[in-house]
Length: 275
View 1 (cartoon, rainbow, N blue to C red):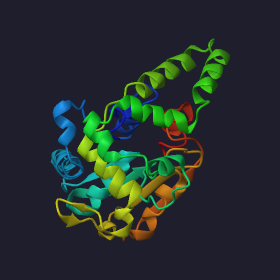
View 2 (cartoon, one colour):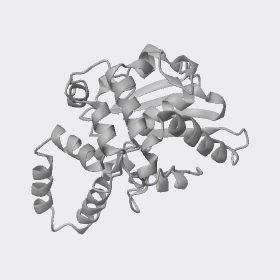
View 3 (cartoon, rainbow, N blue to C red):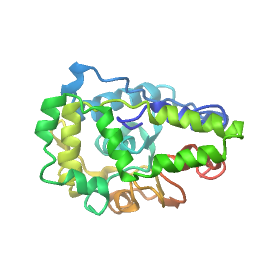
View 4 (cartoon, rainbow, N blue to C red):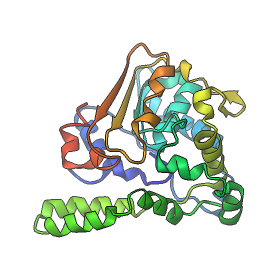
């Protein structure tokens, strides 16, 4: 999962749980819970999370597999982390599924790209002042991408207030979307500077623990999922991955829907999940 949101979006509630669906298909499912960063985590690095933490989780899960390999799915920023890890340490990766995952940051026409590249967005001052970048700031940024979203949701809520099934799902998603965590300062600083601003991953200049991350080292099967109405991770951020990996079995799927709704909506169980 992303470092910004809680993991349980993939296990939201009965009938709206991707984890539940996968288990029903016969898969063993493991989900990383990043926990809640404390003040001491302001120095937690991108390298530690992407190499050490994910690496340990992959090795633990791989012990349950006959060939000591696992299928790795990463959602949003989690997909960025998973992709980097798969290129850095491919030995235990059976397949990779980046789900609405930003990989290329060259196209700055999106608002997040524009905002993070403004001169008066001072990363040093922000991280020095806050330690861990506050979740309230991050959530406000996403709200500003679509300022009328909350009003639209409120209107839809009133229209559907008679539908108990709708209300159960609505409140579950709203609970999750307002249950965010702050971003470890050192990790955030590198994420914004070296990925959003410098696009070092696609340039082949990004490193983990001093070793260059080469996306062409990804040779396992790859299924990348993008959403047409995704205002957080547009196609131009996700699709370029397919141009640089060396996988002989790779597929890019473009589906209707948005960044969250397409993953946990009622339609997800019949559209996205079987795919």
